[in-house]
Amino acid sequence: DELNSTSRLVASIQEAIPLFESAYGGHWLVLGSRTPFVEAILLETGVASHVTTLEYANLSACPGLHPSISPVLPREFCQGYLGEERFDGFIQWSSVEHSGMGMYGDEINHW
Image (cartoon, rainbow, N blue to C red):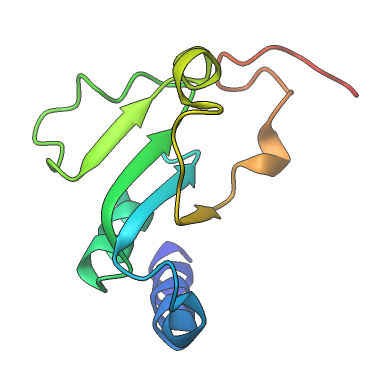
């Protein structure tokens, strides 16, 4: 269930914090997050001081979005982030396996 999987994610991140030594407290990229629970975990544990969320849905209109979370759409990411922006870490949670299937407004790509 969702509560157990979220609890496991929190525990996994807390357990891995020593491995993040060079990225700890930095700028992290989260791939695919319609609800910012991964971002909240990264910020709450101190792993990230700022998080950029790459998501097909436009999250910038979300009310109450935390000031340390910056949403970006894929086309914006390709235009302005690649090559310029550097991230200290990257995490994805249940998103890559759905890409290219057209489920979230993304282009259908069967490889």
